[in-house]
Image (cartoon, rainbow, N blue to C red; front, side, top):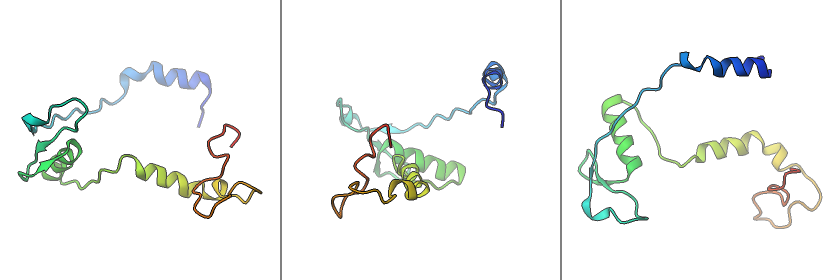
Length: 113
């Protein structure tokens, strides 16, 4: 692949030709008593149970699109990151692990890592 600046600039200049992402509107019945600031939105789901915004979207796609999904707040990406970089993260360097329950080396958050 050509990732030169001129090629990347051309890609963004031609962005008008990109495929438009379809927009879906999912209508749910919110609970009136759950509109407090800082509270999670709660809806009456398609199964008449109380559900979160994410659960409502999952129900919608299961009913209208025959899709199955899971709400995991990006945990799948973090897990794949850990698996792909396992050998680098847990490379045996002296004094990087001090405790048996330590889940990352001491320098994991440093820019030198």
